Length: 356
Image (cartoon, rainbow, N blue to C red; front, top):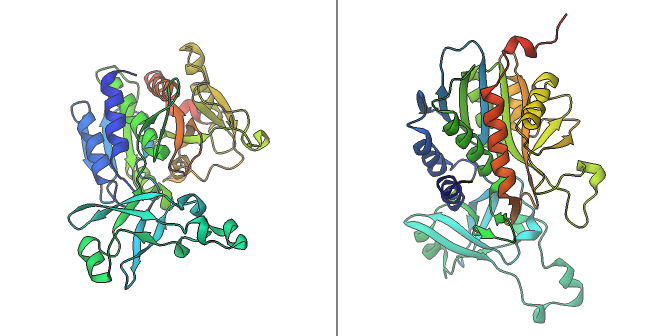
């Protein structure tokens, strides 16, 4: 990955973009492709929608959602402690002792999910340090009263865990919110690289909002784009860490390339095109079997209007929905190459329909 691309990815991941507050991340991505796109705009939900090569007979939508899991301020008690409510799928026991940053009235406000020290715990309490429900853990922002806290934050203010980019060994990186800002980054990078090339399709890029709340943005964006075919880019479960049951997700590992998903949701001819593109371009890839596909925006594209042939490219990721999501930058780069190559040599939509 070149320096310009890597800088964009780091900048995107540094921005808090919890579901419903994706604006700053999407504006950053819009700036990266504004000189490439034929048309570019935001829709009423805040989805970023850009088009290349308008008028081609086959419409293809490439999509990655830009929201991450997070929180909103639900309640402020008389002592100034905050209770948060989740935005997306939070694993609550992981939050004990975590730092949080809130979008405050006048800028970022720091807080901590405090825990009682072990010295003050009875033996039967030590297994309960990590709460099971978010309502059972308070956020300490240092305020001494409700009035003081309310000067800093308001009810409904968004927040995320304060965990940033950390380089690990080799090309591995850990960061909060790879799910799925990295997917939005991949579609933006592929789109940018396709600019100026002759394309066989009308290409619609969507960096969508509120996937974590029910595939919201991609659903409405797909009705606008009316794609014949779509490719969703999201993170996928890596099974190469201790304690995983590979029978659940297969032998998916970091560094072995993007995952091309196989199952009844994914059009077989479209999937075969991705596999052929990878093999021809000597791009390493992995297969993951999914008996249902309703947990990603590929599902939203598939059901829009008269339906679309869809595929899912997943970037293998460890520790999904935690503050230390970990992936390989080589897998990210190869996902960009696979997506761009598949679009550049895309078949017409009529070939994706079963023959009589």
